[in-house]
Amino acid sequence: MKLIQKIKISVLQIDNEEIQFQIELTNGISSSSLDFYGYADEFKAFATGLISFPITISDNIVYELGENIEKWAYYMLLKVYCYEANGHTAIQIIIDNHKEPPYTNKTEFFITTVPASLNNLGQLLNDWNPKTKKEITWIAE
Image 1 (spheres, rainbow, N blue to C red):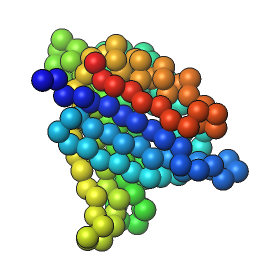
Image 2: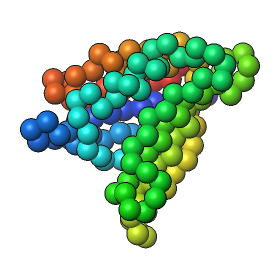
Image 3: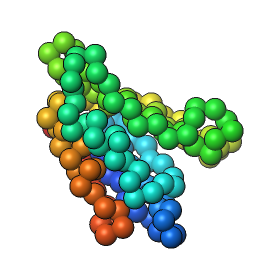
């Protein structure tokens, strides 16, 4: 049985230019979600890197939100890299909502995929206008 690995990003609300997003991520075994604030172009730089990924086998693309220290309201890391010389790729996912127990959400897991699928994710994010389309879903190949 093949596990469904995916990333879903939804718009929860728009207040002037600021957007409240919710991201849901799963590798079919582990999953996590995070609500956070950003802007319509929040994922553009990440998308640009993904569209041409990988340029070299040591290439990596990073989307980082906040810092992994307690003074920040939350932290999220999406790090895309090749884990084998043949080009097999992974997305390392780290989420920490920096809340006290019992509201703590700290997760780390990986989505494995292929470069072409990541290129598709990049194109999906690049073309997305969260002000007009409230949700996108990418399923890893």
